[in-house]
Image (cartoon, rainbow, N blue to C red; front, side):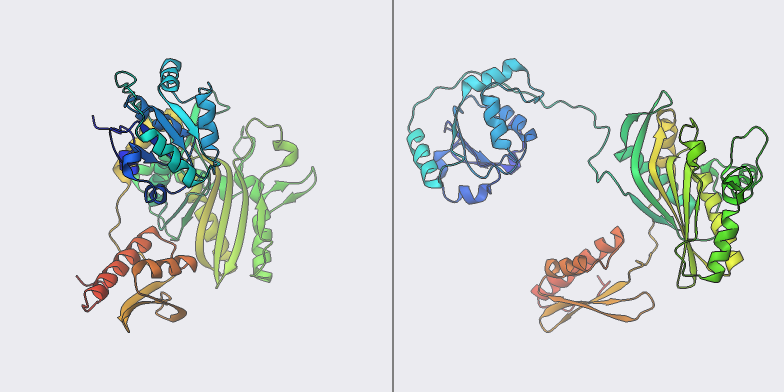
Length: 458
């Protein structure tokens, strides 16, 4: 095994016979490296976080020649302070045994020069350069534990999927939950994987009931009335439809919320008050089975009607597909009654989860039904035409109906232009961003080589 054993590609090596290591904390190691002769140190690198201390310790233990560590630089995240605490006896929960940490403490002497000048650091390095030291002992190689990662690093909230079909959106959201969801306990004596505030937007009015959704036509036909009518089967506490079409305010008052929404939109299609609430504070505050779907909002834009539904707790494997089909039918119904065209359906799930009993089956759905779409899907925010002009690159922005906008970006390299585009928020799709990066890179190479450039040509 070569040395250093951890993150060698991020560290600067000097004289491997030296007994000195330099830790530059947050100060750029390249800057320090340019000021210090290589023969003054064996290894030089940054330390950005407390987690990085474990890798530092493993590298030093694996090289018993290292007897001195010079700590120097900007301590932006207190990683230097935590390292000093380690040398004084705090184990810092590094997943390294106390025995090995004690060996590390005996092996090295640490010079804390965080408040000193670079000139003073160089002086101490000079004094250490010719100091005769013996190796501490045999190398101690601590293999990194191969602990299984159950949750990939992520943004924690607002995972967004936009698809034409419910059947295309569902496995993609399941995939996000299984990759990025937090494993946590539920109130049903089982675990779940959960994401917060997921957003799925469906753009097509007509939906295909694909077999892998595990919803039969009969099951859908039986479920839709529970959302689209006030009918309530015997023995059922409530249905979404009952609360939408016959919301009981008190013993004597019922409100047809959907009828009211239709009237509001007919009277004023730019209203922001076309909302329905399914949560009943009096009934649901102490209920063990309160409604999961809690809110609808209907908004018109450019003659189209858009429905946003908020589900506080959403079983994404068993419940979401049925919910989505029913909500889509609700939007179509209100569109018909108001003479507004279909816009999109957006479902926000505050807690989007998959129960552990469904993890295996979820994996099969993901593996068998996520497809890489090779078809061109236009970015709703428009497209760019890239060309070379006057010894530079230009990218002109257009709407999807081919109208030139006021946005035209100019520069001499791809980075200069894509940063301008990002600043103006003119891209909404990952595939569009990747495509623009590729074409700008081609344009830059053509510019450098004094060749003609034509977008989408190879």
